Image (cartoon, rainbow, N blue to C red; front, side, top):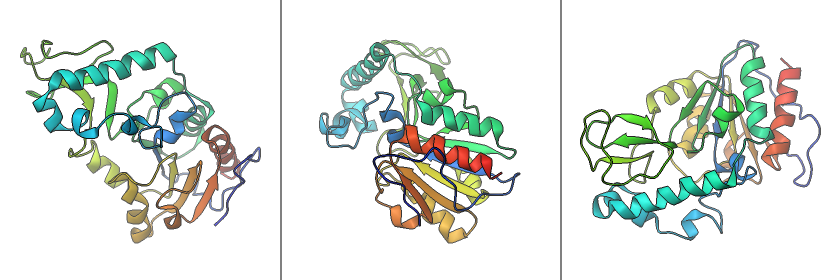
Length: 256
């Protein structure tokens, strides 16, 4: 296992293993890749869940009990992100470049509910935890873009009923989205890269273990510091995402 220094990263990181030119790459991203763009993380000591109770705003039970309180929390999050003018960073841009330049398939599976990957130009992308800028109807499952405030009075454009519109995000106790497609991709990839994840949130935290059991792909962790599952990865590099992700992508493309 190789580790880069925490204080600085080389201009190019030479990967221990480069997949075949037509090889499939799956990249898992977490809050760490967006933190340098100015977005709050959830699980850091000063993160969102240190300031508000999960049980009050991020479960189906909370929405059933007090939907206006849940709406108020997500309305605040949307408004805050707008005022900050959050933009993609070098790590997002590097992954978009990798998707465009790699001869084979590159799939990004993100746990993040922001749209920074899309803004950077990534196209082959799955949001397993949903997206802040969308709403979903609890009655008919219709999903629509949503940039403003949301309330119990909003009517669904699909079924016309009011009271069922909710943030299109996966709450605690709910099944992540796109799991069939993600499982297939993990089982058929040649390289798995985990970026900016804590290794504490399942099922994403179990992806590397599944790949190692199958023996199908080389596994790499790119993170600010070792995650809870760091020992499962065959290769790791640590430092700010905006430094190590472009450096690793540059090395990967150079070796292709």
